[in-house]
Image (cartoon, rainbow, N blue to C red):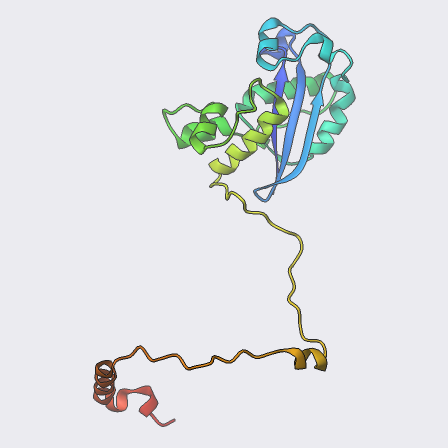
Length: 233
């Protein structure tokens, strides 16, 4: 299964109040493992950046002024996510913005059922407990020390780790290789002659006591014809 863990940063809380996406970050997961393939794009919102939003992600008007508009990156974004299932923390927020931006450039909306909301998953799994991304990092012992400000790609990478924990748990240090290891085989008579068979210098001493041998023999005698080795085929 191909999944895309996704996050956005915006100028505000509601696209229908004139707010826009300013950053998209996404991480690809295939069959439960990150592939290393990512998507990251800053976007010119074509409007000013409110101070409240700047305090959250630190993306200024000056920084975004030369970045592409959403209309210029929409095709690349859709090509990256394709038909994958999306994984988003508080999915209703990001999906509302993504679909608003898509509608403004005459693109088809992404169905809400294509998104897994990790916020809802966490609330169901840990009812009554904090379910923010930072809280889940603390719960699963995930390092989020680099998260001084919100950033779409960094948050997606952190959320991917959280999602794998919510889905059953990571296995630290577990790496899969596409290369199948092979063992060396003897390919010539000379190689066979060079092989040295190690012989134990002395036999291992038996650890069975005389009392145990006697008890075993009594047990065998009591079996009589029931013993398999006494039956003649």
